[in-house]
Length: 296
Image (tube, rainbow, N blue to C red; front, top):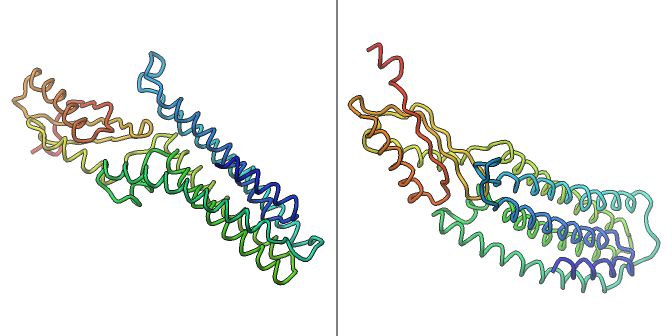
């Protein structure tokens, strides 16, 4: 869809000379490249653990997704901003872009709307599995490929509206600076999207913790297990999309035997995996009571 839209936008941009239309064409090219990179990210991140990567390859997803955000920033935003500033400061000959670009924008709006609907359907399914509202799921999901597609589709639809307004004002006023302003705004919009995705992926790539509500729920489940009196340290870290690593320093009951501790540890892993399908690894480290408890 993006390739077809990019081709139509490019033809209309060359015919009309519209900076906004050319920016939208490059935007669609950047989206196409981004989605190709996200496809690679998804495939490589799903590879099974091996001796050199015992916890899997999930974080490689975020490396490729970070590169996808850089593509959006450099290719899409860079061209749109430079082209828009050029029109604003130097102008362009001609009185109107004509109606062809507007027809192409309408076609692109329909195509991008279909893409957004499909991605939101996928997000709704994920939100239902997680038991959270769809908006919350999109904001906190560790599946940044899905998040990137949704944000890019929203940005694409917003960019199309901006381009249409700029072209319309150029058509009715004869002033091409409206077209340049539209191109500049599209570029700034892409900057916001690219920086948001880059920051999200960089945080996950460097070992981001699970969301606070999820950490609280996981910790409460561990604390409720029989034989565990206290949880001193608790860590729930994202290893990849839908993939969590859980580790905790726990104080077992004083009368717990080695067999009891082993049983509770096994039960903790099985219970958390049943309760939270994204949990892949659970490690419990038996430790003594806090120093204050020992002193008392």
